[in-house]
Length: 219
Image (cartoon, rainbow, N blue to C red; front, side, top):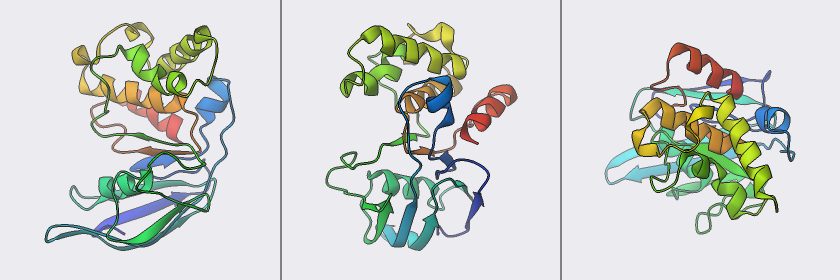
């Protein structure tokens, strides 16, 4: 595990991994009312990663069963975000392997696996050229989940309502606060209805009420 970090598991929630995370997205299945996600396990074996002389991950071994909620705790710079980026396939380890639902993560073709994995990035990673609604709808449209775009708009509206941004559909990300951007990114992840959902600092910059709302979604 990351040096000076801690991993906390909770069998009472749905599966996942992150600074907070989950695998079976109840908001996607129930509140958004479409598709079905299947919680998947994660197995990490001997994962190492260095950036120059800085050894960030030192032989991480971790196994997460489907249906577990996992929190990674640690000081800044201990490798929490780096570990998440490896799980989603954005960073290639120096050694070791990650399996999601028994399928090895392919670093040369991230996102091409059998299971849908979503991540809410610390930076939110929104497209500044798209409105809030179009950012949230991006996955549904790119993957042609629905033939009728009115269904896409309905799901996007529901997701933005969940995170308290129903009035911001036509706004550009550049005018949003950091906390609002994080909530848009959360809505975008929810509409993917992923089998595994990763969060990197999901409540940073949010007020106490919205922190509780996002926390309830995760748990």
